[in-house]
Image (cartoon, rainbow, N blue to C red; front, top):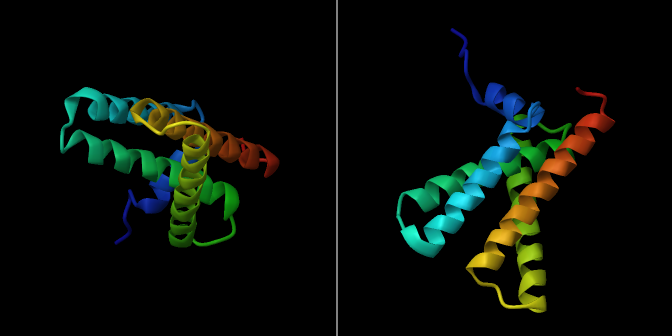
Length: 129
């Protein structure tokens, strides 16, 4: 019996991102993280939105940088790349100025934008539409 809705289906849907729905979902997760950090401070909203943010952007980066690998390794390498990119952009922000809640939000938005643009560029370079 074959699964109709597996990880491959989810990955393909996120990576295709035809109408930028997953990019918008990633931005919405960042805004929810900001609202949670600044005022709500809910133990449920923050982790859920962080998981959504990490999964979407890890799939973007994994597909863009490691297209020839298997799905599990694409996701894991994408997650590692996302963590490295977040650390690097956060470090730059910390060196230039202080890293507070507003700047953490800007770092998250910048990394989400970079991963989405990299995914679109590699998708266009490979001839996918």
